[in-house]
Image (cartoon, rainbow, N blue to C red; front, top):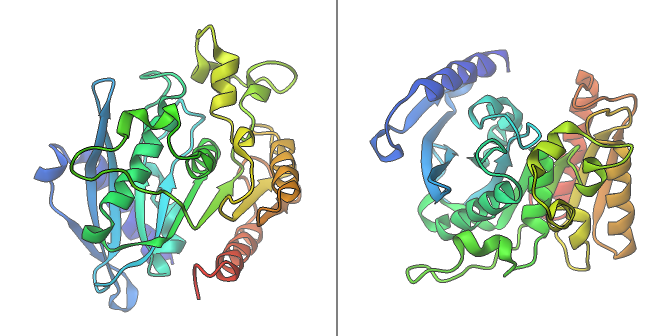
Length: 304
């Protein structure tokens, strides 16, 4: 594991300093202990919005030539900062399981206010389905995950019904037509579930206010991008991991989502990290969390 992490840290640096467009960049390969090999194709442009190229990286096991379960990872940062390159270690456990990983970037608040980030991640998910054959993504086993704001974006991206205005930036085109985007599961690491709760009142958070900006209809936009708005029957299974001492995203948001999903009988689990802050978990808590994730995915027939 230590060797793998050193290698990945080197790769992060290389990814940051590479220049040029995605089609001009080489596919990068690295070897892990035991001869296992992974490839990464960085900075594939999946769309453009507000004069901004939107990019993602595809990670995949070199020796796998058939479709595999695929993780779509969305980084955190309160919708105001963060990069996909800084998040590689977060999805390393899935790579080690032989999964493919799509690592997504999206517009920050300094570029475009809400709901831009949601529009982008919906477009990224649509790209995954449209390009599944080329990259050997198993579309019956697409799992969304992310931390904090990335957890929120994973939830809203997987919970939105088809055909909302949030899909208008990447809707059906003549070449592909539209696709059904039914993900297999969502792994939510302490994500926001009610944005309105964070832009006013006792739980107000500056990052949420910054994402809304000075829009006169901020409350309506916040409701539009809140996962709790879309709780209904038939959603994919959802597992949430959240510390009960989180001072950045209130733990109560995880509890409310869990209770709402239970009410409509959606398969879900809330793993509470006792005395856990905002991702500041003990190593044993992380080990336990991933054990629960693998069990949850197995129980829902996504992994063996």
